[in-house]
Length: 131
Length: 366
Image 1: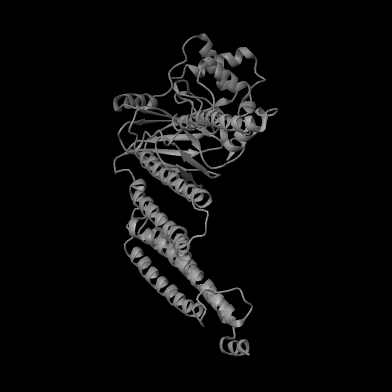
Image 2: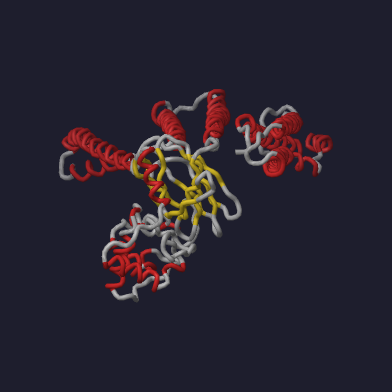
């Protein structure tokens, strides 16, 4: 009875699986954007001896946006993970448990993506030229 | 663990045929003695092993035996990394001993959680971030090009040797091969490219490595801090003779370097003696000049290494042979044996007297 009620309230949809890959997706997009912006800037705009200048600013903006996006996903995931009265996801085959488990996985992936995105963004703090 | 197993085996072997009490006594004594002896043996093995490993840190091909600004930074980074790797290893082994030997009983959930999240998540993230910041902070200086007006040297990765051209400010170039000479304490700009396949230019004692990519010119700044003779190698697999694509780098005092460069600019000296003169005739008659240039003679080939001052170089065949008349002879007679995949054909079909004359001629081109 309890299980039936839970299933009704947290019936998993396809979107829940998609949410899991959003944070790593944001990291990948951020990496690609930083790379291509810098490559085009150095090859076509200022040349190999030029300063990174605005490209660094662009990377800073990408990084802030990416971290904000990952933060939002992480927040949604944290709410899902703490759904119900259990504190830690267990391995029971119930809809509520799946909900919590997917939330937990999404939260961990978000944390990993945030660290990776910050590491990529750090580069722009130190490298100031196209050398 | 290994020491214990060895000690136990030795103990078992020695105490056969004794009474139970004797065995116990013998076991206790021999255990102590054997373990002490084994411990000493293992200790001396560790010391010997460490010495052997450390011996690999020096030599003409070692970043840890740094003789240039870039290599010095890289060596410092390496020592920091090695030190923290040892520290982390000791901490992990210490924890293992603690958990297995010292306090094998269950610990509180809270302590376990703290260790896993603190030591397994937070600490690696922070340590890696610290090293990333340190590594990134080194980069701007390592990638800094040599200041304008510095000596410029163009190095081209050929199959499988190095074409070296010293570029004068007026655009004139002095070509040589498989050898760099650099003035100590002066920044030098090295321009790297390749006509066909990717190579990687690496002088471990002086700086990091950089790829030579067809279609683009990569730049590297070298600043030697010590005089001496070092070696370089191709650090990117490029084909059959990749492992035999070496070169020598001589770092010299400025005056000595200037004298050397002035000499390299001169055309080849005239062949001295009848044997060398015969060698020069044979060089031209056998078509060597189609691939090799010897400035000041009709030999003007550009496919192979420039041989104008080949006798004065530190090595032959791209760092694989010494530079004596006999080595010239060996190289010409058995080129393909000495360097499989080489584009120069062997001239072993020439009579030995001819090869000797050619060797005398080339050896005399100092």
